[in-house]
Length: 567
Ligand code: TEU
Ligand code: CA
Image 1 (tube, rainbow, N blue to C red):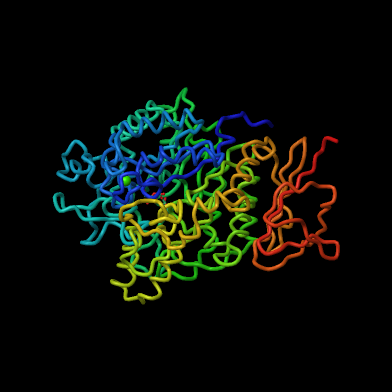
Image 2: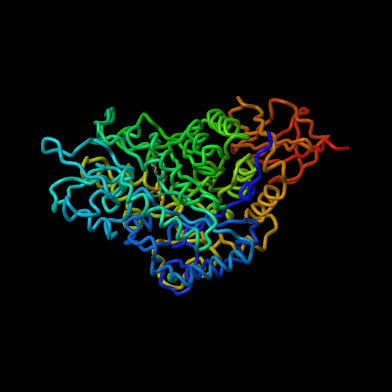
């Protein structure tokens, strides 16, 4: 079956984290004018769309994911006129724009919530989720995604509101028709402004089990993640179908649902064009395999073990085959919610360059739309922070409070977890050059720049043809310019090899073979690849090495071969 062609099938999306991209007025915060100034750089990467994390008015409890005005621009980012100029200039350069809309919750400083909390009779009361306490306790033992309870007491009405994220982010009540309409109005407003796509934040959580049952707690934490009561409930599909109808009917807007815990089955339901829900979703399943579930005094995302490559391949293959020609797939290693990929799965030391290139080759030549986080294209690493006050993420402080302050776990242990796993790792400023603050800002950056900027920066890599940056350009070019990489079939090779990730992409015209050494050691392939009849297109080392007639892979080596069917 031939997939109906859509413009976003060959989109490569570059994620800009506005506050950390480029600061033009030296207040230490990246801004919209900074993105406008850097458009030529973005174009030079070969990407064709940018995703901007939220730029709306917000008290910034969660870096803009706590919106206080959906129609206003965060003053530190700029003005509506700046945003209009960005959209127009990006379009003129062939770059589309994806906005990040948060429809699961607002800021507690949003006028809707200020009203809602005033009294039980308030006209906006049902825009949020209210419950009475049970026997003097919180309504349920549900744990929020930032740790701690999801319930917060409201003194004015002597009951509780639900917040899956921070307590300054009350959840919206999608059962309210008026609320839903208010949200559709927001989405339509931005679609009419010329935005080409919307990422719908935390969208799988918009429906909750309104019977509010207790979660089964097998951890040694007081509250428990009870996803089955607030993720991927059937009503999410109902609401999204309505969203599609009220916002997208007749439009050509791309919708990307953030669906962290969706499996292939849910993803198919969300992204099958027949269902008219989303065009694609972003799941975290593929990137949760290095969680250590035997540790339960912290939520899973703060734990870490070595990822089993065989298991990873199995999961990736499920997604590749499960959605193929039915739904659509997304590919990414990084976003603003995860540690940096080279620090996580590659090598920060001698093989920094090789491993960064290998990871790009492995991921983005598979089937699906690629999402690349700013700085990934130069191989940026995790933050080099040492003290709690270096961090900015609300989630870090909740973790510290719940574990060290309240439960008495060791400061050293928790600080190490924060260092390895926290989201600020992905949020340090973009490293443009070797001048002060990596050229990000002449002021005091809102979050520290990684000190490795002296060597690791865009300018240095522009000058080096073998840099990570120039390699990313080659991968993006290969990806976007080629029907086989966009629509070709995916076949996993060497499924049980614990060290090598290999696959082919093929269509009627030819076959590409991608072979990646995921380790820092030499590896020989279990099978002989007939490299002699293939053409090497790309790699992160010179030449090819063989041993005993077998292809031999150097540490983190990546190879792309092509065999033409038409001779
Ligand atoms: O993240 C949402 C998110 O990570 C949860 O949906 C996820 O379900 C949870 O961690 C369980 O695994 C988005 C944004 O990307 C993030 O930056 C925001 O902090 C969050 O929503 C709240 O808006
Ligand atoms: Ca600024």
